[in-house]
Each structure stands twice: as C-alpha cells, then as structure tokens.
Amino acid sequence: MSTWRTTPITTVRTAVTFLPFLLAGSLIAFAQTPDAPQCRLTHLPVCVRQVAQDEIGIVASPLHAETSDLLWILPFGAATGLAVHYDSQAIQDLGVHPNRENNFENLSTWGGLYLPFGASAAAYFASTSRHNGYLTETAVLSAEAMADAGILNEGLKYALDREGPQLDNARGGLWPDGPKGWPNSPSMPSEHAMNIWAFAHVVTGQYNGIATKAILYSLAGAVSVSRVVARQHFPSDVVVGSTLGWLVGGYVLHHRSLEHGSLVDLSEVRTPLGHGLQLRLNLSRLR
Image (tube, rainbow, N blue to C red):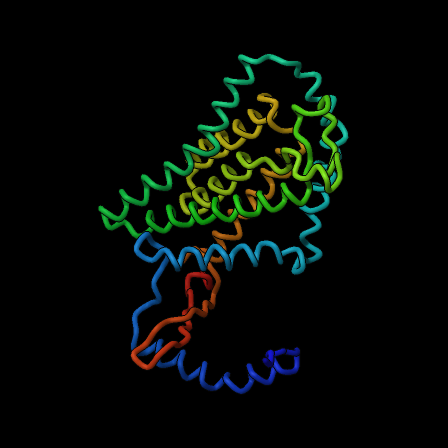
C-alpha cells in the first residue's frame, strides 16, 4: 500500500500547475453566480468554516506582529506581570463572603454569557424578519467572535493549567501537580471577560455611538471585576481574558464585516461548471 507524501517543492509545483484553472474558475464564478453564501442559520457549514478560518488566523497572528504592535504588547505584558505578582494577595485581601460572591457570580454569568448570546440571537431573528442586513451582520459577527473567543479560551486554559483562586490557598500555580494532575480546574484566562469583550468590540465597531460604547464597555468592565470579586478568577486571569477578547472581536470585525473587512476577499463558490473561486473587492476600505 503506497502513501502520498508532499514536500514544499511538490506543494509549490501543484499550486503553479492549478493556478490558471483556479483563476479561470474565479472569473466564471464572478461573472455567472451571485455572492457566495454568508454565515446564516440556513448556511451553518459556512459559519463553521469561517470560525475555523478565524481561529487559525487568530492563533497565527503573533507571527505577523509588527514593531508598532509593541505599543500595546509591552503595556499588556507589564500589566499581566504586575497582576500575577499581586494575584494571591489580592484574593486573600478580598476575604471570603459567600453571599457577596454568589451575587457577583450571578452578575458576571448573566452579563458575560447569557446577555451577549441572548442579544445576538434576538438581534438576528429581529433583523431577518425586518430585512435589516446590517443588524443581521452585527448579530452574526458578534456570535462568531464569541465562538472564536470560547475556543481560544479553552485551548489556553488547558495549556496553562493555572489553578483557580479557590484552590491551594489562592496560590495560583501553573501546572501545580504536573502532568499527572492535569487539568486542575484551570482559570486563565477568564472566559466571561473574554466573551463579553469580544462581543462589545464587535457591536461597538458596527454601532459606534457614544451611548452604545458607554453601555457595553461599562458592562464589560463590570463583568471583569465581578469575576474577581466572586473569587472565580485572579486579576491577571481577567486582564488576559479581557485583552484577548478585545483582540478577537477586532480580528473578526476587521476580517468579516463588509464595512470594516479586507479590501480583497477570495472565497470558494459552486458554479454550473463545478467549484470555483470568487474575487470580491470591498471598495469601502478605500474611503
């Protein structure tokens, strides 16, 4: 039984060989077919593909960091390091207050999970019934951003395996019991903070009024603080979760929004002649 093995040279040769056919297919698709299906409930495979594509791009984004990115990377690293240093002391200073912790746990759960997911769903159904394409896009993008944030969050949690503040006298160790004890109720980054900040960035990017920003950023800040007061996360967990959530929301907004998206978009479409590629130009990016 033979196996097919590819090398970089083989891959390049294959790409060069099929490039003319791909370009021809793109011209046919562009001329004879409507736009490729967008992520909607009627096209769930498209949603899955887009989330997967975004996730790959998000994970690989550090490889494309530029010197100008140091303007936020350095402060983020310093804030995270400072928070990690004082994490244990901060949680111990809060003390143990079951009623207070329960109230803030409920606040963060409703504000960080139920409300944004519910808002995206409500906006989607309301916009489709009223044929409001822009609101539909906002609902879809916010849901995609939260899906991307959730996947990234789980991956980082199990990779870091940082024990939560309710364990081991809030020591907050990484891989505290080694591989044998993995996973150990990992807490970094904060899922609630990551989710609400991704949601807030997308929605405020689409509707950038002062009132919208004030409401959503206040909610995101309240959720982030609540996770610490509820003794569910350390301050550094929230710092990392909030920052990554914001970045994930910005990534989805930039790459998927028709208004904020890329100048050139290449996607696969089906034509009467088979599969092809469709080239779309987003002229709004030139404004």
